[in-house]
Image: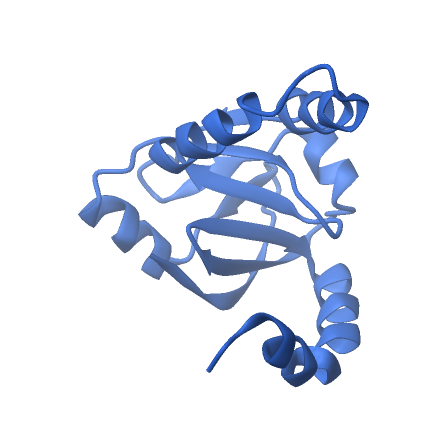
Length: 145
């Protein structure tokens, strides 16, 4: 559903504009609301409301008697915020999420199929630089192509 890599900036009012391709996908799929939360690898995860509910049900099914499950759920859900893009496709990210992801001004917005990831530009550069060499090795281990 969401694919590609886009460079954007946070504006003076702290808003982030979603890439036009993502706004088009949202419009075509009647997505009006997103949920943003702490992601992995120092980025933010952003889900459509429908996908958020799917993920939420998976995580709620993990037994709360397991300490790691409690910790994960606390951090994941306490970081969640509802965002509704305005008519220009801009969203306002909560400051605590920008702090978590080290987002100041320049960001990379990445489409990862069922979710959108929002990265500080420098953090994406580090991740990409460290990961691209192992892409083929990872594909051999994970994929049966």
